[in-house]
Image (cartoon, rainbow, N blue to C red; front, side, top):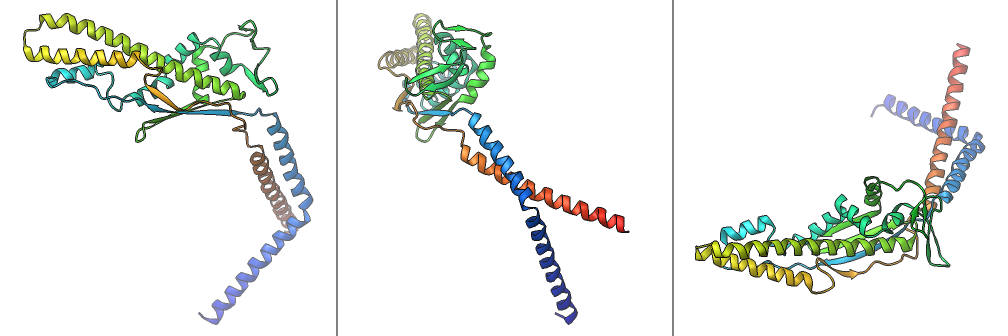
Length: 311
């Protein structure tokens, strides 16, 4: 490196040092303004965060009660048609996704609010929780809890469905055949009750649907067998009848049909959100950065204007 290059490098380093020192001096001169702006943002964040209600999350985990469908030795093409038509109701691997898709569906939500009149108010009309009485508090301007009457126009189920999707989260872990489900609400008790209703109704609805489908299948098969001449097809149809009888037995016994509760819903003790400390710190830092930028912009604008007047 030549002497000239060394000289230029030293000058550049000195210029950078001078510029940084000048910037620090500018910021120190206006530190009160910077601190005031940051404090203003911080105070605003504190006030705003205190207006936000506490949100509680209840969770549950369920194992999927899978069972292999039996189609018999003479199944062949007829067994494949049965699976496509939904006659093999207990196929491995389909119950978990089916349960999850049911819980997420508009049809299920509509069914849920029709059979459980408390679910919709719990979802959209709750404003808090009385910790001493262990009781959910409803907005008195929206819903009359005692008379179970809406004081405003009852929300349409399609509008409430959007709230439902935001409040309920459900995931299926295929490798473990576990379903995790959670619900949030401003009342911890309401969050737990929502999960209880969803789990019970989804399992019951699928049980009812499968029993009806199985009964229709049995009626068709028992009517069709006498009219079937080929022995191979008659044997396959007999296997399908046995399969449907097994499905009906599994659907009718036991308290659960699709899922078995591993970790039941609970009433959470601590809030899930908002994180007020994080919100205030981030907003205060944002105000600090904004204050620094404002001071620097004001200084450089003033300098540029001064230079323009001098020239």
